[in-house]
Length: 158
Image 1: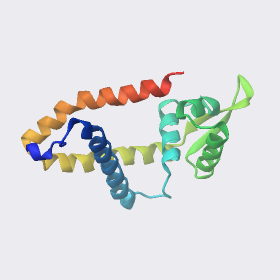
Image 2: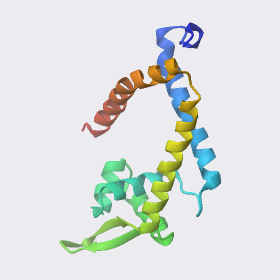
Image 3: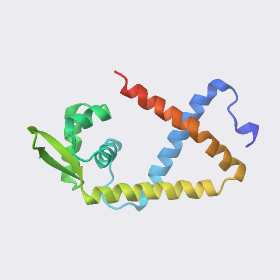
Image 4: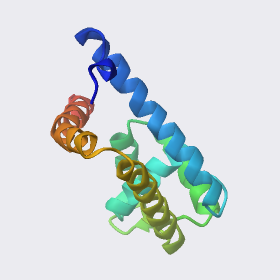
């Protein structure tokens, strides 16, 4: 890595890091959307599907809390995803007023295809880097995980 690649001042690091991460995410989304089948999903829909996949049987109210969205917003997302054949909404046997959410096999397949495509796409780019740059990326992963954990912990705080 060349010193010219480093932020000019330490105070520039947060801005440059967030800009690079957003840019990578945007470019990955654009590239992957080209090869996917089915109608495109919005970010909040994908977030809800990922949550339901990791926590099958989650209640709509719990999903709203977890995603930090209003209950009626999550209900709208649920209706859209049920109509698209990606979510199953079941009545909670313990509380007939509540709904439990489960992903359909199609939803699981779409999430897997996205994850596999993202991993392959990033893998191709990482393979083009020099050994020193790959080592620098690997060395940065613990710090990036700490940033992610800190953001998660802040979101969970009352």
